[in-house]
Image (cartoon, rainbow, N blue to C red; front, side):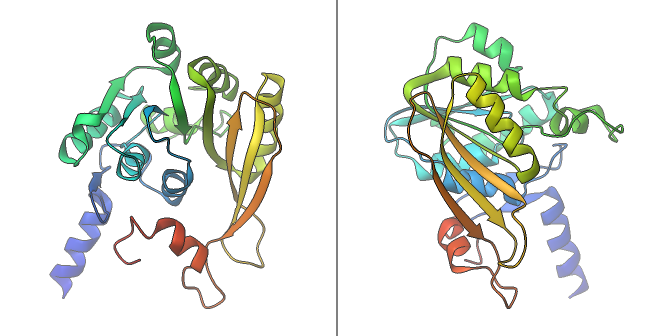
Length: 248
């Protein structure tokens, strides 16, 4: 029993096994978490065309979108940190969708300047902390702090890269999302969907998922509660993530 528990702990530290793929993250500064899984399960995948994952990390969102989309969709994953980019490349190669995914080790400003591609969907789980106390490593600082990728830069690059009818989706802490929306509107974006996430029904929202578009339109607001009163996952959370989690 002790050996089995130790092996399970090692597997969790090294990565996560989902229903159709394994994602290693032991060389990534930021590990696989609920934020990325929510975004990967929630973002509206197109039926044709190209998708872009900005700051892909281990590639978890890229792989989730590949699982959800038909073979007519290709995905570019851009990651500036070399070790994370290499791990995303390895996760891509080990997945069933390797032929549809391209991993690029580049910052998004350089990528934007060099590519002629335009995307039907762009997703990002971006840095969101203002520069503060130092992280343990430079890679973790890059992943966490907006000094490495400001929201203004992210919004500008996504606007340039998005198709006219495309969608741009992000996940952010609730206390950050309001300022993000203000900046987005100043740059010409329209907020089309807001999904507030609560851990429990009685708690306050702690995360928000946003869908942005270039065209002006109404905004749909919804709430997702992660856990029921007894501590188990809610029906809505299960419905959203059932195609990925082994225990759903």
